[in-house]
Amino acid sequence: MSKKIIVCVITLLMVTAVSVSAQNLLLNPGFENGPAGGVSPTDWTAFGNAYQEGSYDPFYPHSGTQLCSMYGNWSGPYNVSGIFQEFTCSEGDEYEMACWARYSSNDPMIGSQAEGGNWMVQKIAFFDAGNNEIHAVESIILDGSFTADTWHYSGGINATAPANTVKVQALVLYIQPDADGGAGHVDDVAFGEAGTVPTEKTSWGKIKSMVK
Image (cartoon, rainbow, N blue to C red; front, top):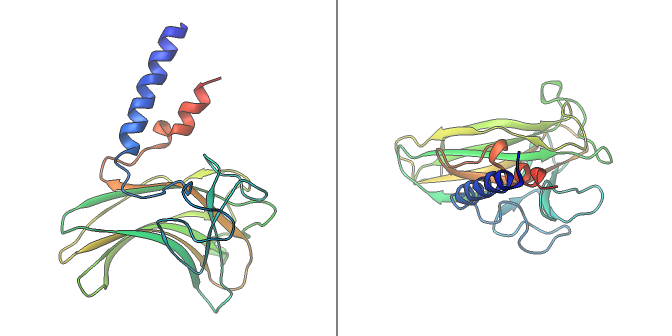
């Protein structure tokens, strides 16, 4: 393949990635904004133990120089740490969500969710005017059965707002059912209207891999 063709292909992919990225509703989706080092992620609502961290062991971002790390609270069975952003919406609005997740062998998650280990999920949740969660879709993005020291693409989830919806939340959660240790890391979260969330093939990481 000639250099001219390669340049044209990369340029086309870059335009596609920028277009998709511009439709991500999340602020600070890659945790690059604001300080790092045991602080709550900028532009996200965080609870429990969820912190924005930089590029130092055991934190190795999927892209950029920062990520979000989460771990359990040791505050009883099924305690949860997490982050979210919320947006107004109405019945029939359809959303997609995806992200990247990993854990370090220096602070590993142990065992699968099915075996009672800690796990992480991505979740789209809809709420009514009384702030009641009325519908949600979620998927597991990480547990101890995943390969350590490797970024795993979550795959996308889709959800449609039911009747009486007034807002939607995009959440990433770390669930600790008992007292296991280990931290999970998340980066490059995408959330938007149906058809706008990037896939692994259109991610900037894939484009960068083509540039030698």
